[in-house]
Image (cartoon, one colour):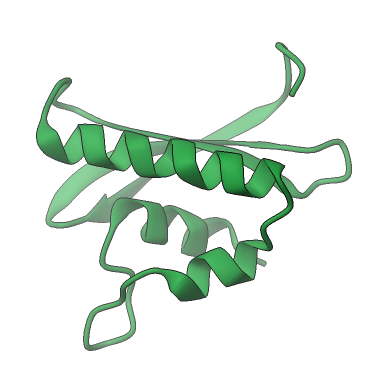
Length: 94
C-alpha cells in the first residue's frame, strides 16, 4: 500500500463499547485495510480490536474476499456482529 492514500473513518459500537474504524481502499475501490481504536488506549478490548483489524488487513491484501471474512466472524442470536471487526466490516460491505 502507498504511504499516502484516501481513507474514511466512522464510529461503531460492539461489546457495549464505542470504537473508531478507519478503512483504506485499493485504487479499484476494494477494501484494503482496516484500523480500529477505542477511547481507552491500552485496554484489552482496544488491543484485541486493533489486532483483529491488522489480521483482517493482511488477509484482504493477500486476496481474501470481504464477504468470506464477514461470514466467518461470530454473530449474536439476532445475526448482528459480535465483535468490533465484524461491526466494521458489516458497515462497509456493499
